[in-house]
Length: 230
Image (cartoon, rainbow, N blue to C red; front, side):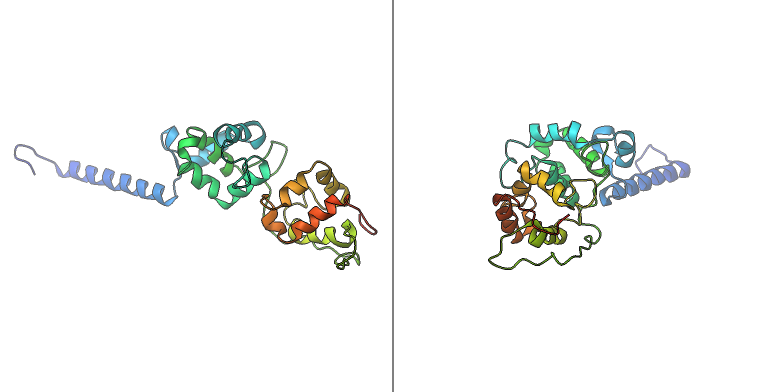
């Protein structure tokens, strides 16, 4: 205690209590128990997400184009479509990057991106969150599945349907880019999106694997339907 100053036991007790309270709060924030938003004075992000819903179509897409499009528009970590960006959001990479090494580019938009991720990373208001990679793939039955043999012409019925069932339907069997029927798949064949996604370097190539070349060959052959394929 310094000469000339006095501290009452009550003052010491209050000071100690405040120090412990602040220390515990900071430690909780660092551990993730209280996620803070530095741009809003430490407001927990849970409250922010409840107060403001962010969607890809009307907000995040524009941010990514403006802040990230100069570099992330090629084959390496392409962020120019919803599917690609969603995969990075689900893996946690996007949140890490906009708060870390890419924070200088994201700037004030980082919090909007984080709110979008915490809100389910929805594409637009009418859609529900997509459970990427969760749950078993729908079971497919029928003699047409796995009936393709080397040398045969690849059709949807004898090959592609089973490929999609194994590699894609875990996520794409609901309202989001449904791939459960020939008619729904053909839409993405005709607009070129299927080839873009599964080709080498494409965002979905890691799921298609070696079957990606089979899908592309089928598309280039006119995407024949074949028998017994709904």
